Amino acid sequence: MINKIEILKKIYTIFDKQVESFSIACKHFCSDCCTDRIWMTSIEGELIIDYLRSKNDLSLLDKITNIPEQKRYHPKTTTNMEAKLSVEDAPIPAPEDNNLFQTCPLLTNNECPIYDVRPMACRSMISTIPCKNKGYAEMPPISMTISTVLSQYIEHIDINGYYGNYKNIFEYLTSSPDSMSIQHVMATEKLLPNQKIKYLMIPPEHRTHLQKIMKEIEQNS
Image (cartoon, rainbow, N blue to C red):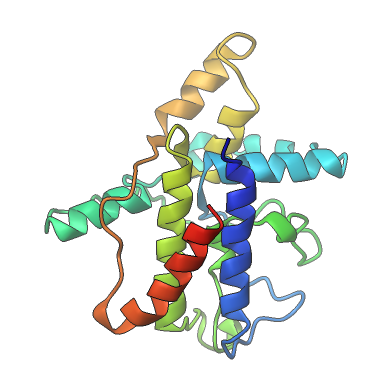
């Protein structure tokens, strides 16, 4: 039986090794990119919950799930849905956005308490310059391609799961149709079912590099 959590960990390791080859400005206590605009899959949420449970610190989830619904940033497509729409030259729906960037509620003294198991959306936020200098990150184009493709694989292996705002993902995973039916329904209403890979979003100039990464993924799956 395929252990999806172990595959997810290996995908994270593959990305982290790739990042080591980039010249980035990100340092310890650098948290300018740590906002609440984070989307992830349910399997990534499961890994985080397992990690917090092992640390006996599930109370951190309360800091997330207590945030009002109107302050959440909701995607209208999953990564694989967006790939399909792009290939078909179809319109890509804009996210449901309140235009308010808020600091990630998990952040503690500019440190991430789930850093080791942070989702790909957080993991991929790297910059070649200090973000404070210009007010935004400058990401190597190849790193954006790598993180996108790996996000597609993560969604693919979590085919029976969901994709969406991390707060709704946590609410979905910590509730149930029986004991917390209202919370469970409200959480899933804002989430999108994960999709299988139909097309990979790889520009021509990055194909050779990505072929090696894809082979590594297949060897670990």
